[in-house]
Image 1 (cartoon, rainbow, N blue to C red):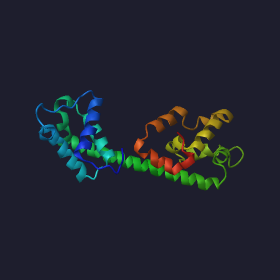
Image 2 (image 1 turned 90 degrees about the vertical axis):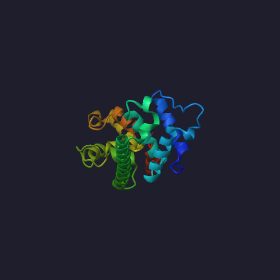
Image 3 (image 1 turned 180 degrees about the vertical axis):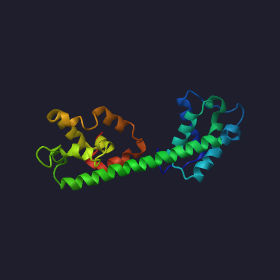
Image 4 (image 1 turned 180 degrees about the horizontal axis):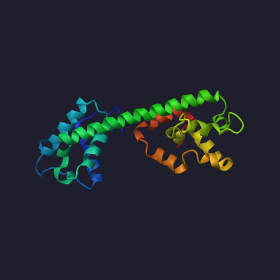
Length: 211
């Protein structure tokens, strides 16, 4: 779905239809009545105006509709009118903006960790740098950086050099590997990250993006 796509009633209806189908509800309009003259369509027009007032992107509208339908216990009976319930609108709007803030924070974490690590490596191969120790008896750099909070789990999950270094730790220094997030935790982090920000993460990491 393109961010540049215009939000109009047809788009909002299509989004609603998809989300209702996920909860096994088929949207229907009264027989012998043009959809645009029905109460259901009035709900579409009303919420579309709200989306426009709020300057929502299609992605935000999609999230809002999904949250509204999932929060409603009687969407089968109320249909599209649930989208204009004031309590539902307040809750969904807050959740959309909270998610948006979290996504911005995630992108900032990736960018900051990435820039910091490259400064530390001083153009040396990142995997080599991550596996090095600052002095004999010290922990490997990747473990030191993680424990000190310089490299966060979100960055480890998407950084290819970090994943390679963690794999090397598994065989060379298993005790140190246990001090970092396990593979299952990293996989969960990748899979549960918002799809909307993956292009931004990929752009920041470039060839170091780990899929």
